[in-house]
Length: 117
Length: 169
Image (tube, rainbow over all chains, first blue to last red; front, side, top):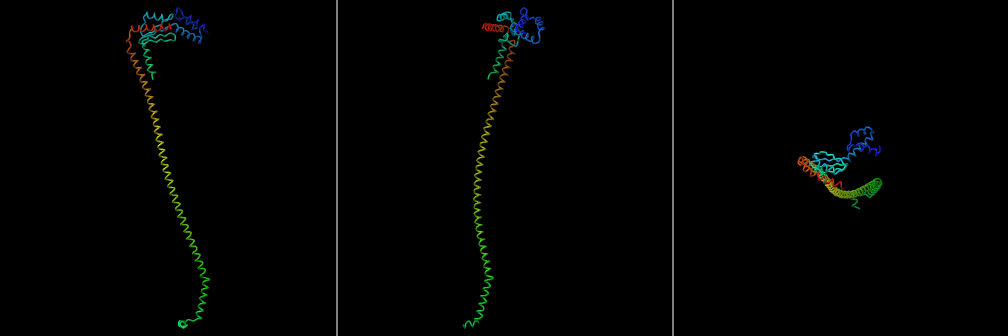
């Protein structure tokens, strides 16, 4: 399967900006083992590019969600509650991870102590 | 002559006796004295030779004894020298061996100290890490519920600000 066709398949897998399970199932049924592998990989990449995952120990207010959405125009914001962060947030977009939380700060302190000679 | 006659001297008898005596002397000289004298001479020569040989032997013995004494003396001196040298060598070897042993012990001690220092360092490092991990774990447990929505919003706004700046750059 060439890249162009793969890209088209990924594009038609989305309906109203969301991944449509029915379409994906139909496409998956018709693909061979290797093509299916490539298709899933491409879908994962597309999801990574479309979605921004925001982890937070508290529920995010609509105002904050809007502000976040404004920071990532055209991307879908997905919030995840993560109590282990203690305070602050962790934003994952594509392969970038933005950490601004207490848990990470503490982890960095421990890491620095471990690496300190 | 009268005196001779008074003593019963008779010239004929005297002459006959002289002849007899000369005959006996001749016979004796011929058959007894000569061989006896020869034998005696031989005996004397032998004894003289024996004495001479004995003297030579004594002389040789004396020389041998002197030589023996000298050899023994030399041998004793050599032995003394050898013993002294051996003693010196032994002392030297002992000294060297002692120094080498001391050096080895020093090296071993240094290595042991280094090893102990290294292992202590590792142990201290582990302890530091574990303590910091424990401290963080303790903090994590203690801080649960310590912060509220208000602090979270402040931090979120700060995060949004940073993200916006980052995306603009």
